[in-house]
Length: 327
Image (cartoon, rainbow, N blue to C red):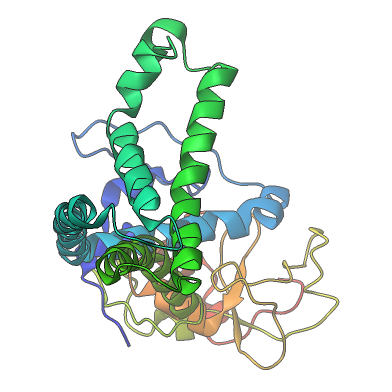
């Protein structure tokens, strides 16, 4: 189980809690960090909750992911610095190899591939200047809409950049007689390409996918923050028995959406379901999902109603009984 510091959670940010777009709660007044009262947002209607609710909570999960990635900022920065240093080392070494062995006999044009790479890299480095001076396009002067020639230039440059390692590796695999130094130089550059893809694309994608799965399944336990509800509060909320007639996404009175807006899984009889006391309509969540949410916030994940205040103002009989299907 992973832990997050309270300061790394979106719900630990009073401004974010108060100002999350399209989800301000009934009767809540947000205050910005400079003390200025925020403009009150209208409460979401039942139809908006059904259609937009999952997106609201998904945005909260994305905030958790973004902040968790920021916590790994030093690691990513170190990897980025290593990639930059590795790039200069490989380019200097391969340039030395090219100058010494470019005339060597080789049944594949590996020397030509190295020369092409030494052309591609400066074009990338001075792409903006080339666009302004050669293609006569300046975004500040001509506007953000790029002309066709600029789009074609950028597309061809990216195509050549991504095709180079594939073509170079194909040539290396089909080399019969060639200088070992040239082969080693090309293989080193292809390996560097692979390392860049691994660090820039594969690792972040896997990290985000794993974190998203853990958060949605409630496997990442969040420490209680100062904005959390009282300990064990979720057990005091009414429980809802699953019924296909009640969880039907119809949006009519007395029904709930078919999905839990926290984990985005469908409701069924295998997991306990808890209901909030939001007005004018309650909201349903998996009890386990709501418990994790209430560990860092006392507001409803959908409408931002203060659940503790709503519970205290509700009839005392709701504290002991389960809510009925029509509640």
